[in-house]
Image (cartoon, rainbow, N blue to C red):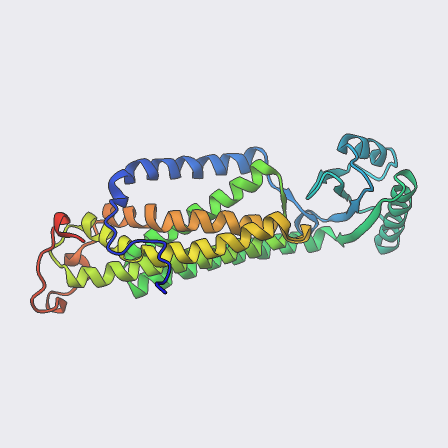
Length: 321
């Protein structure tokens, strides 16, 4: 039985023909994402905003406006109420009361009693409480983790390859992270520590995909020292295309399943990962590679003269498989 091949052998796709269009689109997405985060902000969960979060599942669909009106009538402070999962699942976030842990427990008990009395059949899924000091510390450490991860990755690629490759990988990772932030700003899905973990995972996946392409570029720079850089990048991308598609498609199927039928507690993580796999695959081809062109990567700046294998011949674009 012949194995299934998702990608034909010896593909010759001109990925970089529209590189200017895709780069312009990516820059617009990055700028738009930054603007969305600045204007709309992120819907920080209790992990980062502090307060008390109560997840409720009603027996039947209840309008969010009705829930907000009744909860605000308790005088517990300004509430933030959002549906998640089905139209019967609601997350209620309240500020922490003054008076310490005892007052917080009393507020939680009062809210539980009010919900079960007002909406018979409603069940309380969980009650999470995080103080303002702890939430601020978590936010700072989460931001620091993202920044250090990206910086360390850029240095690693710089040492392993060349500075042009480090710039390409770093811009590609910044592209993926910025668009993920923009997605959460426009959808107002809860942004919590699970999402930070998802973004760190996205950085790792995007880096891995970029390294695979860059490693092939480095090999071909040694092999075809006189080939023009654009045909060489297209050749390298085509040679790694099968691996890229198979890996990405496998992850997309698994994550799409989690998004559709997975538990609500990991919905944000799953959808962030799904988005990250898609844009990470895109950026490794249409962001990381074009930057090498503009940074003028070539055998003259990367491979010593005596490193070319004997008999290496010039390969023109029309001679590519």
